[in-house]
Amino acid sequence: MRQEHRAGEKMFIDFAGKTMPVTDPSTGEVTDAQIFVAVLGASNYTYAEALPSQNLPCWIGAHIRAFEYFNGVSEILIPDNLGSGVTKACRYEPDLNPVYLRLAQHYGTAIIPARPAKPKDKPKVEVGVQIVTRWIIAALRHHTFFSFGELNAKIWELLEHLNTRPFKKIKGSRRELYETLERSCLKPLPAEKYRYIGFRRPTVNIDYHVDVEKHFYSVPYQLVRKKVEAFLTADTVEVFHNNRRIVIHVRSFKEGGYTTLTEHMPKSHQKHREWTPSRIITWAEKTGPATKTLVETILTVRSHPEQGFRSCLGILSLSKKYSPERLEAAAQRTIRIRGYSYKSVKSILATGLDRVPFEGKKEVIPPIHHDNIRGKEYYE
View (cartoon, one colour):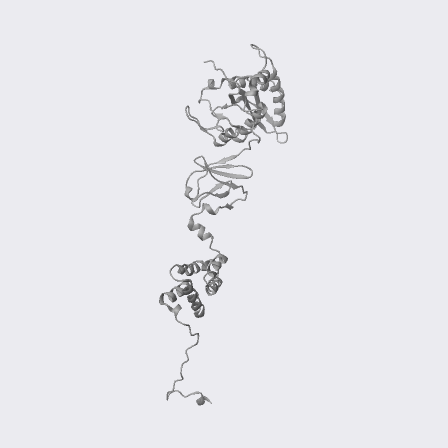
């Protein structure tokens, strides 16, 4: 079926089957350059570029430069089912690479991949690939290039000739059709260029953190053992679940480090995190000076302050059952008898000893008189 393409509607994307060698001048190693080709539907205006690979960063970067070359964005992108663009090919609903999808969202365009094994879905770029192969790749086949910059400079030089060359069967050229027909119909470029974003699909660990580039970032604890999507830039890490952004972290490059937000923690973990000696002492001070002194002593006599956390928190929890006045009195009595423990305070309160005045005097034992006791005079 003959297809009519509306101006500004579609951009077709593919890689040429032929590659071009690029030689490393220091090692002599040869890299096969992949030739990226993009063609506008209505004008056949063509863009081409040599890339080191067909991987995701190269794929995204080539799209950005193609948009800039066309000075606009078409309504629809029609790529092949390359892995960098489509994670799972399907005739009806293919799964798009999330990073590629974000590129399309940034530029306000849609992605409709060609059906698998259906080159006629993208005839424009199929013809464009053939023309680039004949007029650019074949023309440079006897040249030796030592960098991708050198190769692309030559490609773009021949590309200008290709786009300004007159058509054989109709008047004008690709450039003229682009200028008069298609350029004004393209969507304008956004104010900011799209920045390539790395992508990971980690599973949330039991400690509600995800591993991204060997650094661990927190997510809400309800997502434990769930798959999430993490998008990376040079400065941030954004985590999504079910297409909804959960959190954005400042990116850290400290391997093995943790970036944790308190609101992501369960309530019990949040309370445990608040257990610091100074915080517990401050809580105790609200009851009274004796309670504060008792807590400070418990934290001091332990070999490590955390050993006394539970004991101190247990003492403070007694205020739920007993009045602050009784707890303060029990703390005073505990200090006097040097029973620096939760059990001592609890026992004093349970038995009501906090209400009994503390004499503070040692019991005087009367002397014992007996015939068998010689006394000190015997030894004089």
